[in-house]
Image (cartoon, rainbow, N blue to C red; front, side):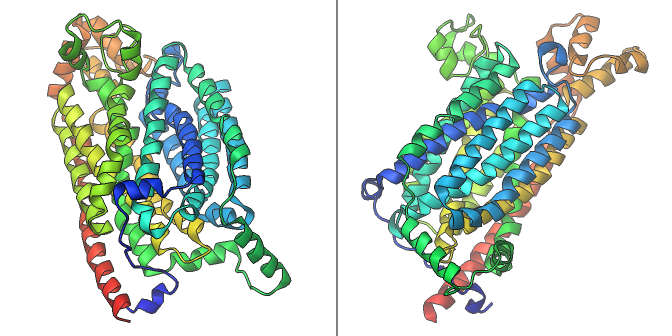
Length: 512
């Protein structure tokens, strides 16, 4: 592969400053956009972490009462819009200005949360998810473009690591807000998230766009005809056709399938099959805890007797929030593609664990392993794209980061809930069990969505937990997770080959 097909792309890996030198070299605008991202993520993850639980929760409990197939349709549409919009809006941010696009996106996102609250059915949630996806797609390139322009090549590794850590503080707090709001009523979750993201209007008052003079000077030259500017879609397509970008998208799509299944399907798996009261008993004894502060921070139910699914998953954000900068400092010593490959392998092992065990502490171990894998791969994708992007196309390239995520998440959004429904859905398994125990198919079909297991509890006279254990042992629940892990393995092989190819090109560029 000749290097001229990457003209304009700088493939050098620049030596990074030390940890403290990197942190102190970051200016106020970096911390300001970090704050804006934090607020946006608290609101976003408040809804995202509990979306699956809301979807399958019966209408009698204020949920949508839809099956996982319909939930998969919502997630796939959400994923496709959120990840493909930045591919084109990234370039708009470069041209019209970051402040303007951040402002518009915040309004769109508020509309999305309010739509979810006011219309509690399939179509209302789908419309809200589409608005939320569109708003996020417009928001991201402006924030990330600002970050690239407010950092130097020497401190990018630490900057992206810290930024990712800030994202996960939001990712940690959002689900905790949701856990406690949804125990009041589901619509409270959406109203709370709309209120939280409104704080970004205050941040925008203090925001000054870096590189604005250069952008305006370039715009003036384009207007006078001094510089010819391609149509945005043509420009984006031209960059996308470069092999370095194209191959990147293909090899990482599998990882994003794996990654998003953790957030879209694992909360449902935990709610249905994992007895999290064991964790509370281990920590506080059989009575649990009545301490409101501990209940909030650990994501417990209001009785303080079990960890809610969002609370379990929050271990992921909590770990990243507290240790991501250390992992960033560690991985700065290695080539970007090497760090990403190791991260992918760790994540695959974690998903295999979820399939193999339903013991609460094993799920905790799986989430810990997955989190380390994620910290090695996720901040690196932005650093990688930000580094190889040609001048004047930083936000566009950071939009491209979303493409493999878009392919992987869209496919996962549709197929992972479907896989779970085939192999592991407690609702389906309970309905089959009711038929095998003599109930007519007509009577089973008449049971409202989400209520089959409780009907089975009534008929068998068994306690919910022993009955759950019996159903788990009688069915191959782990198969859905093994299939997801296999997709990740294919991706890991691709990342390994891509890393080797990239190293060859870097040597060619150095020798040229």
